[in-house]
Structures are given as structure tokens and as C-alpha cells.
Image (cartoon, rainbow, N blue to C red):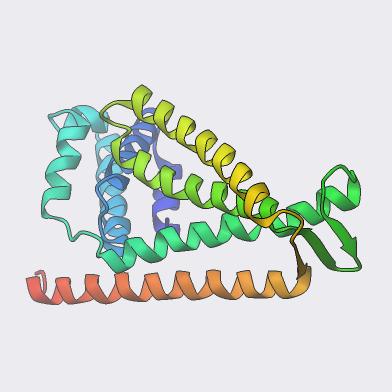
Length: 227
């Protein structure tokens, strides 16, 4: 979130801050355009601050359950496009997959209990093992975004299903990796890997932000200037 939102949040009382955070968490499941979402959270925080200055609790002043209030806001808000969602999910997949190689390098160099081997700044690991790590990391991210969409409706069922699916992917890819790759190994330079992952993360962030800003700008112009 932007600096304005964080600044407003710090000025709120504990109860109003908790209400705003609950609203933010709920609105995140509505997949609102990133720029519109940030403006919306700033507006809500400003409204809460005004209520606080009048000695009111924000949750009481909106006159309805916060979920109902958020749904009414989300209905008319500009939603994320497929491209925005794609680059958001891709960014997190790259991040979680990206930390695997450095983490294996650190674990092996410090503790020496993992299967990979080191040669300077080059890590060599079984291809099957890497397949398992990358598959689990990727599914963990995808599963999180899917679970987040439904956690307000059947939290216990969704979270339990999510954890069970992650474990299943772990067991399945561990078996398939050993079966198909056998003794095949892959060597990766830590420096080259880090540069590549950082570059991909920057590209994903800038692309998603550019798409979101462009869509929000066009929507604002379409609705006309406010007076």
C-alpha cells in the first residue's frame, strides 16, 4: 500500500484501524484494480479519521456490516484485468521459486545436510529434487490466491483442502522426480540466478503497475472529472 494510506492508518485508534484492516482484507478478495484499490483504502481511512474526530467508531458510522459495505463499494469499482492478475501471481511464483536455489546453497554451505553439492558459487543438485521444490513453491502460490478468494465463505474447508493439496503435490512430485530423472543433476550459478530472478521480479512489478495505472486512468477519464 502507498505512503498516504500507511500515514492515515497510524493516526487511527486501535478499533478503527482494525476495522479498516478487516475491510482491506475483504476488499482484496474482490480483485479491484490496484490503483483504484489504493485510492479506495485512502478514502476509507480518511472517512474513519473524520469519524474519529467526531468521537464515533467508523464501523458504527457506516450503518451496516463492513462486509456488506465493502461489497457495495466493490460492485462499482474497476476490477483487475486478467493481465493484472497474471503478473501479480507470476511475480509471487518467481519470488518463491527464486529463493529455492539460494536457500539450498545456504543450507548446504552451513549445515551440509542437503543433497546438493557446491563448487564456489555454483550449486549442483538432483533435477528431481529441484522439480519437487519448484512444483511445491509454485502450487503454494497458486493455491494461496485461489484460497484467498474463498476464505470468507468456508475457511476451515478451504484452508484444509489447500494444505492437503500442497502435501499431495509434494509427495507426487517427489516420486515423479526420482522416477523420471534418476541421477540427473543441474548446476546453477548463484550470481546469475540472483540477477535473473531480480530482473524478472522488476519486469513483473513494472508491467503490472503500468497496466493497472493505465486502466485506472482511462476509467477515470471515462467517468469524467469530478467537481
